[in-house]
Length: 77
Image (cartoon, rainbow, N blue to C red; front, side):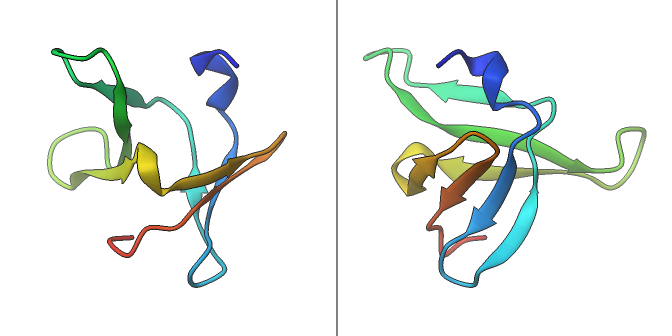
């Protein structure tokens, strides 16, 4: 799977059965020493000025990536 294929997928929290959001413009967090993916950094909130927030999802929290949904188990969400 290519990183670009993640765009548009909905993120579902396995613990609460709730929709967290949809992946749009996001970044991979990569360990510079090992080259391994550490997580996804997804912007949420306002883009201009105040209110810009980011949601970090550790790669180890991702349980399944399906055709339209990503299921995560993340107590921080």
